[in-house]
Length: 115
Image (cartoon, rainbow, N blue to C red; front, top):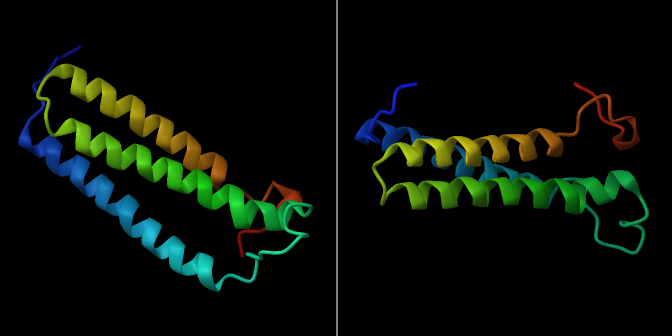
């Protein structure tokens, strides 16, 4: 295994990754405000579909974005191999959270499909 130094090109990749997550977060906030699947009433927590789209999905996506942004902010001050390792594990954790938060078609209780 090569232990390359954390260089400027790595900073660019981390910034692009963080920027993409922020752009997706902004798009998600807009969609959250106009979605018919987001409701704030007493029945929201009783319905799996409404609870997922009102609370669970946005919260998990926000957590993943915070991990990525924190990752980008912490990586600025370091320039060693440990930075690569930390960025990898944090990005993997964020990816796992995003994959869990996607309303996949096989999750029938959410009533979603590909189209």
